[in-house]
Amino acid sequence: MSPISASFSAPAEPGRRSRSAPKPPRRRAILQQLVERAATAPAAAIPLPSPSPRPSLEAQLEGAIRTPPVGRLTRQALLVLALTLLPLGGWATMTTIEQAVLGQGQLIPEGKRKTVTLLEPGILKRLLVKEGALVQAGQAIAQMDVTLAEASADQARAAYWSGRARAARLRAEQEDQRVLAFPEDVVAAAKADPAIEVFLKAEQSLFAARWANYDASIAAQERQIAQAREQVAGARAMKEGAELQVKSARDQIAGLARLLAQGYASRFTVMELQRQEASLAATASASASQEVQYREAMVQGEKHLVGLRYTRLSEIGTDLQTTEAAVAQAQQQLRAARDVLNRRELVAPEAGRVTNIQAFTPGSSIAAGQPILDLVPAEDRLVVEGQILPTDIEQVAVGQRANLRLTAYRMRELPVLPGRVTLVSPDIVTVQSGNQYYTIRAELEPEALERFHEARLFAGMPVEIYVLGEKRTPLSYLWTPVRHAARRAFRD
Picture 1 (cartoon, rainbow, N blue to C red):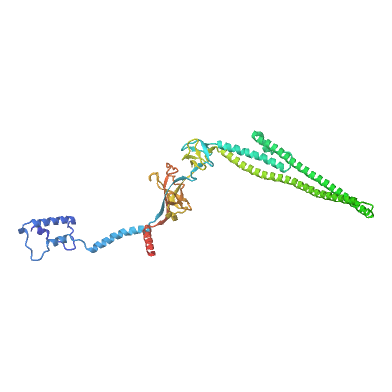
Picture 2 (picture 1 turned 90 degrees about the vertical axis):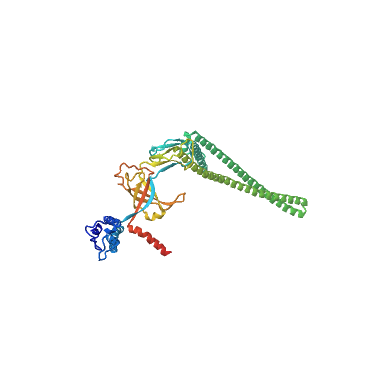
């Protein structure tokens, strides 16, 4: 038999595969060789077909490389899909992932850096520290020019002590004291400072002069009153004398009238007496009028005397009130000037490291409140201060755990450190650029750096903040956006 007929003498039944049959790739190669030989062999070598029908070459090849049934492939695909989805679904429903809110921040001292400023304008005399210097609390860091402060202090001191001396003089005048005695502290200050002694001598002289002027005014007014009193007495005497003469003249006229009726007196004599009576009556009336005028002048003089005393006391009271107010103001100015003099050396409010020096040149003018330099606390604990977007603030609260990553170190050198949120700002912060955020503060757990002794923390280090929230499954992460989208769609 030819090789071709020998090769197809025992074709495999449909649906079965011989145990000795080669693997599919090798079988295809063998079948390919057989096809090539059949195509090149002579026609005489091909045996005549047997009486029974035989499958064609294409049918034989198709049967040789027959594929498995479709149902079998479906079952295998479903099995593979089930073996893949069941573990994945179990992981998606059973595994929990912590939700985290991301924020950016940096390390800062817990007490924050202190900015050293001046309470009032001044001139820098000398800067005593350099950038990065470590200073102690109370150490002098700058000297200020106090020329203006000294002038202000001298002016306030002069106003204070002169006011004290004047107030003592006014009180003595108010109490009608004839001897001026200054308080003991004023006398002691005058002994220590000749300028203050000049104030005391001036007040002594003014005290004596004012009393002399007042006494002279009182004496002059009293003399006027006495003169008016004497004039009243003289006018009264003249009135009384004139009235007596009028009475006498009237008696004489009455007697002469009887004699005139009997013819023993002349009419001329009677008329002369009547003329004298009228003149005396006019004199008595004028004297009475003068008495009233002089008495009124005496009353006015007494009123003027009382007015002098009242005016004096009123002026003394007003001057004393004004002087005491000026003394109080001068005392405040003197205290402020002394405070400036005591702060001629600007000292560090606490121990720390000097940074951000903004005034270097001696003689430079520094405005009130203008920063001179900053102090970073040396012994203060470092905490993390960061910013959280307003859309994430509802997921952040005090006490939440947080993972803190110092980006200055590589992950293999310093991994994520545990921490806890200690502060959340009550209101939103808006910067000049228009961006808004909430400020949070977190601190490292006490044991966070126990295994990393070589790690060093510095203020200003950038930190990534992961505020840990609720635990959710991966399926929840996938389903939540779909649920929210469906809710919005149904609402629209």
